[in-house]
Length: 419
Image 1 (cartoon, rainbow, N blue to C red):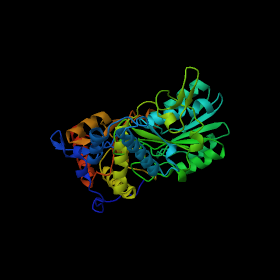
Image 2 (image 1 turned 30 degrees about the vertical axis):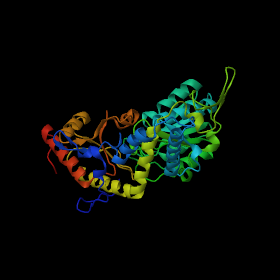
Image 3 (image 1 turned 90 degrees about the horizontal axis):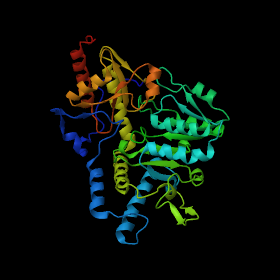
Image 4 (image 1 turned 90 degrees about the vertical axis):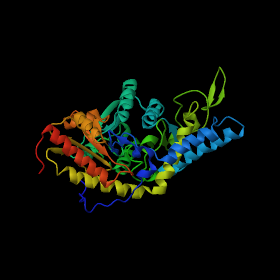
């Protein structure tokens, strides 16, 4: 577990709440304390304004028109692609495919790369802490091809069992799918080591970065992964937009997974030829405004500084971890040595859903449930957990409000005395 930091030692590194309009609205007559950032982050005013400005000043379809608005809209869209390239430190913008989010990115890889490269008897290796989005597409692919799904177990502390990973990895392994950061526990996985080991047996690696890109610097070239996916809405951007990074030498050999406009070069009733990457994978009119909004969100985090964001959130996580352990009957689920921005826990005698409801009456928004990680909950023998997840706009006062609300919940349920 991260070394705890006392509340007195904890001082705010960031104070950015004023940038986020929604944080000024009360909830149930209380100040909104938004701690459900693992599900989605709130949006700064400049992201909201960027989308509105697009529709008011720049709206036109892209890649097709010869008029000024179409060309201007195309420029904004491709500017967004360059911002994603820069965010991930990809080698070239052509390695970035816009998607609806992490889930669609994984499904794209499973449907396009998978149907060409996965055969009966092959193995796909994932981990026991994956989000359903990094489980179900591979199950579907295995059912379609006769491949086998293997799962790396998770230790009691919420870390990957790397000895088991090495034992499961073999010449039949074709793909490894792994979360960069666990959405249910905050565990930061050793993705660079995982990639190195997978490549030694000839496997490719897809990293689910949904919970990573808003909380730390990501360098896909340093990681060495073949695919990396994330969602804009967890990065202070709009919903319905995200991106897939794929190594160019792999992406250029992948077939389209959807057919339609803008992914073609020529069409006849006899044969269709396809556009080059990445347009080959962006059929139909894309979410242009979403790309513009995500571009603004990326620029916002760059201005603040991802290193500063990471330090700020680590401080909040340390403060919350120490403070919650002063309460009786608390069990933290996920005590890995390296964690990011997520604190999952159980309170004796209170179902997570009941706990979430009581905290909501105090204006404290957390997530309660299985967090789309039902196999992980089964591994820990629980139906779900309460999850507080932090973002750059959260403060020490938010942590104190969380602890005060937990005390109230325990008092209401009569679950022990503070120690």
